[in-house]
Length: 498
Image (tube, rainbow, N blue to C red):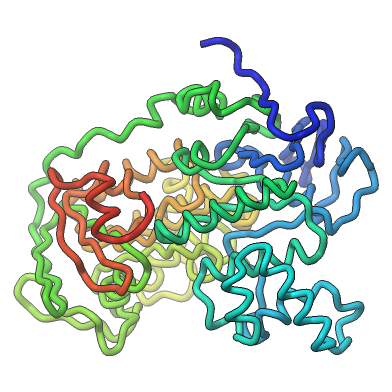
């Protein structure tokens, strides 16, 4: 393959709307960025790639003004003192105020002080104009609605409209399609392409190579805080080459090998029933859940004791079971990894040690630490190759992918009979995904029943024995066996993007 060339996207081949040069940033003794570069042209859709811990989040926060750089420079249209409103970030966890209206959320940055009243006429005029750039129908229909009434993809559109209203010329999007349906994803892509034609640039952070290739023009790859690929046209580089540039094995882009037979340990049989659906799951089986949140969440909430009344019925070894609380489910041998690391997973104010042993303490009805916990936590770190300065460090000192591994490490010691996983690979790089796949297969091989909801069809196909598909209304639309699993079948059954 010839050397990757730089794209000529954009109307001016020499000017960049955003240019970050030799950015350096350290937190204490930890060097996060060691000379990162990023150059984006006007009207370009640019992918920022890299493994967990490569420095992507830190670079984005520096560009958006959340962090100060230690060295280097950032310019917008050639100016080293850029207007901060020229850059806007839309994170996975949206920063909207649910009790305020759509119009008020869009107009909020125009307020001069915290106690200023919002002029209704100006507020609605600005909001309507900004939202119409994104979605005219949404602008006509929802300006008076509280944001809480909007679907997730509509909230994303409101965030983008707010950024445009503030004068943003570069949008930074962090995993924007993680929970979108196929049609919602297509709408978002259409909006970004239309904004590109109007001169608005997009920086896309995603671990989904399919959507990167469908949307982006060029890519920049970070590795250990440095730009190892700078403005490479995606048409000129393979997935394998990108993964190798990230410092991971090229085989990581291939599906993992099929699992072997589960260990002949004590067998357990679980029957899950809801109106119109009844299926039996045995020890050692990985059962996938596919579809928008309404369907899989009913199964998950029932299994972990968070649904009263339960949406599904559970029978374990012929005995009907209903858990009255998550603590009761844990003590019965049910483990749970939430897809929302920030709100339901990581204990941000407690050290890594407490995060790892939290489930064991609940199972043992303990509050105080035991003398064995430090050894158990360090063993978990070593077993899962988790890079952390100390078990006493806070979770915020490690990358998002490492935090996800910490949540899985939480269930090593309790060795659950049932392990419920909700988007366990969301926002993690390809190499970490493969490590998580291996952990799931190992848990199943040890006799655990794994129930796994994912919006990434490729990983469900690679790892699961069967998949329950749910349509957009949340109703089970079918159960697909291993030999029936492919992206087309799952997309048809769920209405979700592949």
